Image (cartoon, rainbow over all chains, first blue to last red; front, side, top):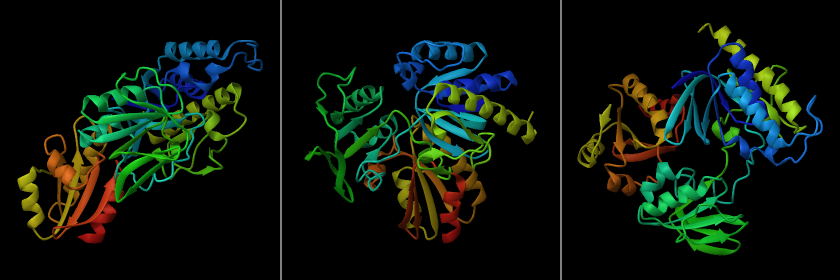
Length: 284
Length: 103
């Protein structure tokens, strides 16, 4: 499926970018978690959004989302797992691939820090995708580090494949099958020699062949290793253009202030800039 | 583009020269994304390297035997020995660089 503009992130910046690009008649796909899971949804009162003081974060988000939907933006709920820059942009969500000619990053603040051992054992026991790699761990012990809302579902899937599955998370999971042991834990480290042999959980080791680390979002710099950042913020110019051609960014991912009004303004600019980029490509 | 099974893969491994194999599965999104890249490289390097794919769903023993635990994984072999592997879907230049260094 191909769109003119792909937007990664369904918060205020992404939705404002979607409305702006639809206003220039570009086809738009927004990839992101449910809008109800945006950090703004937790705000009990937003006092500083111009003209609409006193709304809850949830109310604002609902209206933003409805506006983008009415403008004709399309939506996919899920995590952008992998991205490729080749003949435009391809983005993987679950087992689907979406293509676009311009890309806008509006993922919010994504924690980029990794667990000790995580990078070292990537491809040798550490995985970020149960549906991709689960079959390769059939009948073996695995640990799921559940940090995203859909992580329990992926753990259930691994269990069904015959993996001896343990679920580790800082929070009580919702929707985890009852026969999957759950450990509440904070401090984790991947252990092994050559390949993964255990996950260390608050000092105790759980022996396993695979560790599935399931975060709510993949950091933009993991999707696009060449993306320029400073102190964790994506570097952009006044047009919200990043250092990569055709890639724009807006909202909390470009740095403080982490405010809806700033995200919406930047999203609007990013949307228009993406349209200009497409027009200059001469494909329209 | 060659679609290997255990037997044809072992035969290819016995040949001298450069072999690049993409371990993939149909349900894997990043693998779908990488597919066209591998096909394009296979065309580009025809006659210089053997480029093929292994469906890990159909060949689990071969895949796990080679230590493939994430897909896509692309493994390069030269004269029957592994020289490099790339995990995850990378842009074509990443694979081309390894091919160029070894053809």
